Image (cartoon, rainbow, N blue to C red; front, side):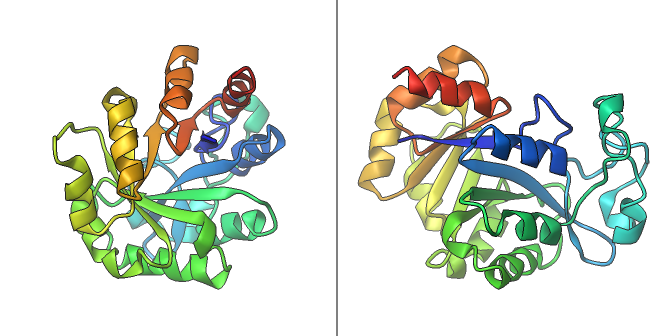
Length: 241
């Protein structure tokens, strides 16, 4: 069965990558949560999509130039709605502590394409290992070098290449990098690609699907997961199959 994974939490209904969005996704019975990780100036993994805080907080500047304590003072909710005023950026540690006793699949995207944070792979991996969550977590990234760096980890944790680029040798290229999963833009989805992934024991998940027709097509293709802003709708659609 295709797993329903909440994109940055239930991000259609609450500010992305915040505790309200994660808690709402869990309440909606999402089966997994996707979130994004950057490193602060003091090397703390924090959950935010952009490398810059401007879009989703009342601050300015790059994550890498903030200490974690400084980031916590920013308002990461008011941009979305006054209802979420005072919501803060959280650390990966906070998130893992919250998820630890919940039966959720975790997809943690390393945001290291524009800024290739030194050792982000090992920092995040070791934290996940500390909370004994390796067996239900995938680390994903668009950074091909980062995927290669994680090659030694793939026997213990999911490692996924994120891509929106079409290529005929996608599966074999991805395996060569050292990944055991592919997370593709919806435009690349085909039944044949999913079938080839199954033959190669490669997980395939699709991002970011919100429309009924796209979600249903993902279900019919029998991909391993759909990453969506509207997990409640995706679950409802799956129930009519």
